[in-house]
Image (cartoon, rainbow, N blue to C red):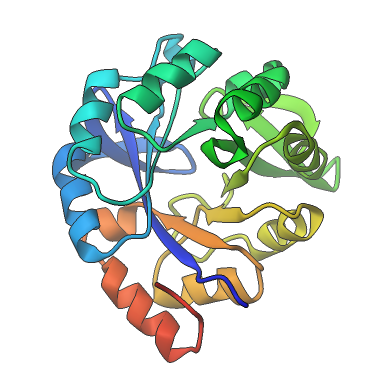
Length: 253
């Protein structure tokens, strides 16, 4: 049986507002997170991802109150990330109404956090987010942390496989090179990671139109695809993307 592919809007939140940039910079306002969550729930999104994008850089916790307000609007699974560094942070976010937590910077520096979270809450609650940028010298993709600001020594494929071994239930894979460019997902990156792990991979970075989602599923072998600006600025809707995918014979909910 083929699992249905998921369409996931993403709320990148900074100082209580949803923002969107290009390659992680030039952020502009995209609206109120609670209002957008309500819209996406009504549009038939399969899940919603909420990332407090400046929490790790500013060294603070995710905005629990905003998470609670967003969760109160949702009937769909809700993933929250940004500034989650400990098991207690995970508990607080899940108590606030999230169904899953997304670990990025903290997990790179303390991989045991993945194992702790998975053994306490179950793998299905643990999403490992990977910000990937192609490195010409390495000839492969490198992992970046702190909202894409810091280069690490890790390669993306090796880190994705390690995250799966440690108990991650899912990989949220963002191509920094494609982010906000609207030219399509990085298919070679998405395919490479999807083939390296057995857990679901969410493609992120680069969606510009419905056809790009089909490419992510067919060529990129992704299990889900995430987008922000094209939904926030009403360039297309979740429903329109799903209708297009159905037309292409791709199973969606």
